[in-house]
Length: 594
Image: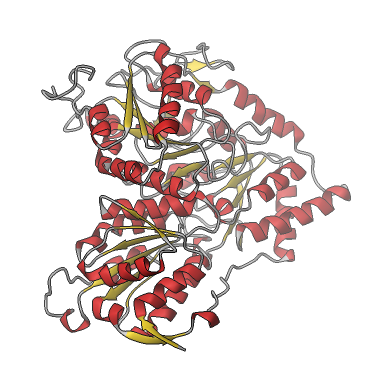
């Protein structure tokens, strides 16, 4: 056994658990932990400009690659409370991140000491486990348990709070005998697989709904194999987007109230059987349960037992890791097909492909100021199949999900349930820290971009280059559109005459994003018309390669554009003209409400 400080043992365990990068902000109550990081110098540290930003960087880092666990670090008091949003976002989307906070000395915890707050109790509802370590000797085992919990069952975040005297205390610890605990993951049985496949075989118009659990399980290849062997079309959820390539013949589009395709909703409504794997029946995907479930039989597979029946009771539920279940489903389907027992759904799949060819929304608008739909059309032209998109919430994200294309798992990185504004920028930095080579394009509206714009300096300082597309209508666009139901446009405009704006800034659009980005050490380009788009993308990529910093491309949009959405999947309002199969000519006009 070796005598060492508790924090030195903690850093050794982080190394053994595979941590290579951490994001955080030092402070008095966490400085002992930082001294241990510095002494080892084995874990890269990225200094955030805001502690919430550090938590979102950790999320991006985890989401970028299978097996990653992002770590965020802060001091006592407000550092922990600032990271609650990141913990909530990670918890909601089943993302494991480890939050480490400093704390006042144990003797001062009940004395209203400076920045002493019960952060474990505050964080408890948005973590798998949150604890303040009161005994130094427990530090190694608390960290071991944290990683075990984060990886077991439904993944999620953990917070470890370390009083400063616990950090500094000496303990006996032998890292050479340390081993990570094997995570627990439930697995489907053969009998369950045969039951589920029997129910599938009885259907005439089946669909697979592929959720984020498939991506968490690194099982996208198994999903595609299962779809191909059965011939059943796939509807990915927003968190599962990329599990099957957008141009795969069996990719039937996304369903939902906002981030959906017309053909995806139509196909779901035409189905009679839904095989949900690794999904949670989120309300933006389903709308009201009655509309979503009417006339359909459901099988639901999820790693978390309490997810089965949480939103509605399926006809058959299976508690299983998505990868383990898909492997069994594939085995059974392969055997049945070889024996001639598997039904032929090729006619149904052809119907789904026909909808995908024809039920499109128009993107080819030529006017100035730009319509957002055309920006996404130009993005599809400019960026290749390996591009990873990062986005959070708002009309920018909703339209992005309707019009962009994703071809690989973990190439759509999105906080699906929490949707905090400001998430996109730090999350993109976390993705870049995890993967130095992948093309990364962040997508923000102007308000999301402004929320944590200071984190651009992190990308400049730490050489974390990526492209950030900002679609600027100088509005809280989604809230403005929602306020139409109240016949108002109240406190949602960001427009003002900026007396300090540079000569190139758009008059009346308020914040000069180009000037701010450049002031934070990055590069930026402003685009006003369609014929500038492709040149701007090419220039931005060249600037990024030359300077190795984030590059912002701001598109000046028309102030008001309503994006298709509705209260039910069978009642989505289409505000613009539909398009034919080429995407550039209307075949019919729906409700033009502006």
